[in-house]
Image (cartoon, rainbow, N blue to C red; front, side):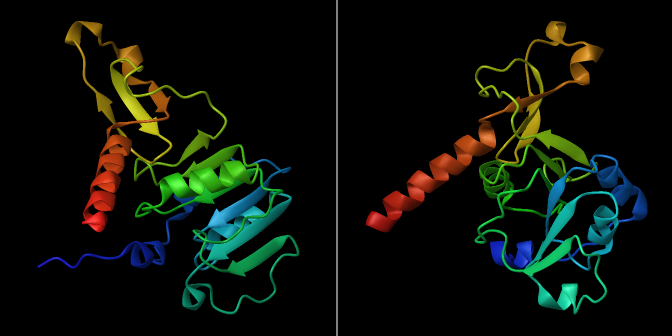
Length: 200
């Protein structure tokens, strides 16, 4: 029987990546950035970011993974806390979320936008390659989008079907940024059902 992990258990897992993956993150950063690294782990990527950006806040919930960091760059600020509940600094320009197992994408995107970040560099939505999510982009609803690939601020991704004659290779290369998607709708329905059952 497969064990079901809680949201807290998933969010505290540490999964280091290889250097080409870290380089894909570093390539998205600017020298003027103030970065919030959510789930900084052993600070392997965070130290590299500190070498090319103005400042890095490194948030890690698992103190055992972060260890006792010594001789940190002056612009690297380690924070042992739960990013889901922490009040974020308001000088952030970009977030980094390298957690393919992330279950709180919507929460992190919302908190980063509120703190002033304009980008989220992550592998959490598609659970593979690194992407830079424009947190200020105009987004369509699922019903207002056409056939093709989509990615939502809730973390949902997928393909909206349509007539095959409407498909082209150009459309295959485009990902529509959505404000709502089937995952959002499912979570909304599940939330209403849970609240209804709690009232019984």
